[in-house]
Image (tube, rainbow, N blue to C red; front, side, top):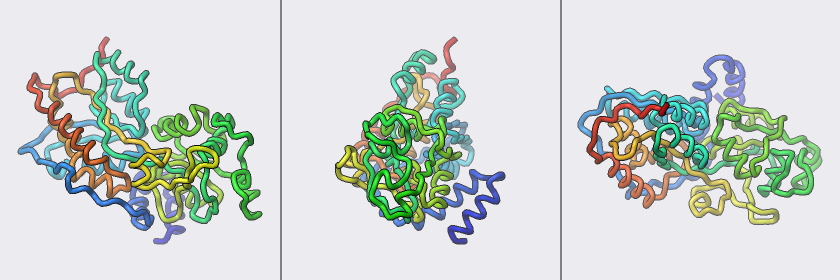
Length: 355
């Protein structure tokens, strides 16, 4: 099935099984994306299987992280057949709300919790959540592969997606000719915007780090997830949208970005994400409800250990994201192992919000 046939099938099945289709589509599409991925460092700690593991775990949150949380869960269920893991991926904000309500043990988030959110969590439970970064991502600004744009500054991206232009660009941007000298077909072509909804940590990160907190333009087409945003861009030669680099395909390309007007354009790659030259690098996080001085229950403990291990980070790489630096993984693994070794009363259930 070629790209056009896939899109036709997507439109026909849009009312039934959209999420399942999108995940199957991207599992195939990413294989032909042409992205050169780094090799996995053999010094990353291996996963050590425990003798037996039973119980249940609930994870909710980031749609961007869905390929990771579902793959980690599937591998753990293979290792431990009596283990039950429930994963819901309806957005970082939804996952955080579930964590605050005591409904899940882990919130997967594609952005860092704000200080206000940490304060709210502490007010509910009496202690702060445990933060564990598990992967590196580059938030990409994607266009169709035929788009001739050479690069954009963050100020131009801001003007493309927001009327407020808080980064100081002096003119509005509505057609492609507003950001670069282009041939006639492109110069007068209106820019079509695609992005994520308000429950998305990706949208929150984009608004904070690109728009300086401004609202997105109302004419932006809001996708049900990162995959749907990218599929729309594959159909629309004049479109532009933002999504995780993990959703890249051969039919679209990330726009090189410059931090300042007139600065050097930087393409999102493993190297530029790691050295900080790409301006929209971010970590992907697990936030955990774990009372202090209480050992986390087995399912929760092994989920985190697996995500930080050689096998877990291989999944990160296979899904198109970037593994954490080895030194950081070693530090996090040691920290988590120390927490797990705490000997105290059973903590099989997360603490409930205080009255």
